[in-house]
Amino acid sequence: MEIWMRITILPVISLFLFVGLFIGVDTWQFRNNSAAGTAEIISLRAEQNSTSSSDGPSRDFVTHYPTVRFVTDHGMEYEMETTQGLQPPIAKIGDRVPVRYSVNGNRVQVRLEYGAWRDWLLAGSITFFSLVFFICALFLTKRDVPKI
Image (cartoon, rainbow, N blue to C red; front, side, top):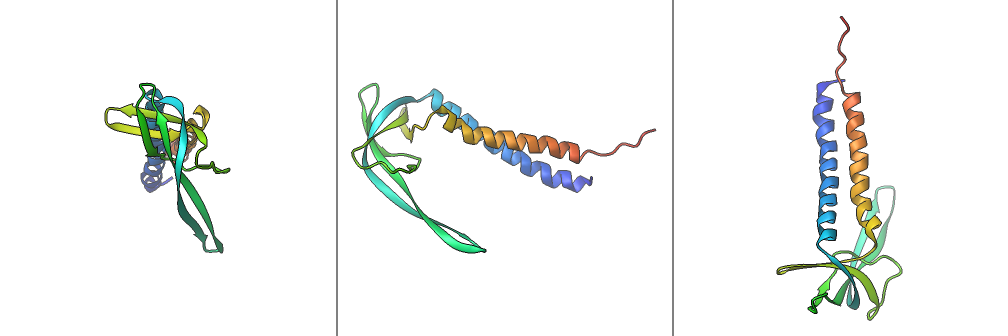
C-alpha cells in the first residue's frame, strides 16, 4: 500500500482512539469522585432538535433536560440542571430520579444515573472499534518487503 494511506488513515483512527480513551478517563474520574443519590425534578427544559437527510423528510425530536434538587451526604442542598437529557418515558415534575453527583470545591456536577454499564458503554465501544480498525489499518498498509 502507498505511504499516503498511512499518513491519512492512521491519524484519523488515532483520533477516534484518543476520543474513546478521553471519554473513558472522564467517566472513571467522575465515578470515582461521585456519590449516588436521588433527586427531585423541579423543572424541565425542552430542547427542540431535528435531523435532516437528503433522501427523506426531516425528523424532529425533543430532548428534556431536568433541573433537579438533591441533598449531598454532608447535608448541602443543590439545585442544578443535569448534563444529560431524559430518556423516554419522560419523568414528570416532582418525580424522584437516581443521580450521581460530584462536589469538588466550588465545582458541582450532577448526572442522571443509568448504571455503570451505560457509563462505560460509549467509551468502551469507541475505544474497542477504533483499536480494531487501527490494528487492521497497520496490517493493511504495511510495506511489502521483497524476499532475498
